Image (cartoon, rainbow, N blue to C red):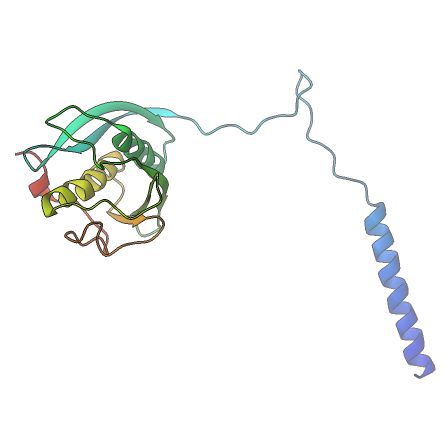
Amino acid sequence: MSRRAATALVAVCAAVLIGAFLLWRRPAPAPPPATPSGEAPRLAAPALLPFRARLWLPSADGRLAAAELDLVSEERPEARAAAALGALLALAPEPPLAPVFPAPVAVHKVLLGGDGLLYVDLRPADGGAPAGAGSTEELQRVYAIVHTALEAAPEVRGVVLLWNGVQRRSLAGHVDTARPLGRFAPMEPR
């Protein structure tokens, strides 16, 4: 190795060591200022606002029936939809109305895409596949979710249903859920 290369190598090593030493000696960032009570300040929680949700439930006549419920959520459309869908799936209605699913199903996540589509991820308690159903029952299940989400968040232009994080071609083999869904008027009361 030439004398010039050795000198350059020693200079680079010295610069690295000096830089590491200076970083090590740098003071830690100051903690956030204390409040008068001596506690660190807390981040503000999102404001919860009341809203009246229209939930759509399967009915014995093969259509959907509306039930209104007062809820609270953040103002964001996906938060309103998540609150309404959570309430819908938690209801245990009396006949002639029926729950949306025969076994517990929860809303895992609701996301609003930049294209105006609302992605709703449903998760059953047992983690399995959707319960089997006839065509009318599946129509009621799918559109109870879609209509409830669209009522809660009118800004949404369509709903994409996911089951355990996956968009399925159908929940029970009769209704095409491989595309975004909108209102389906034949399911609503006349």
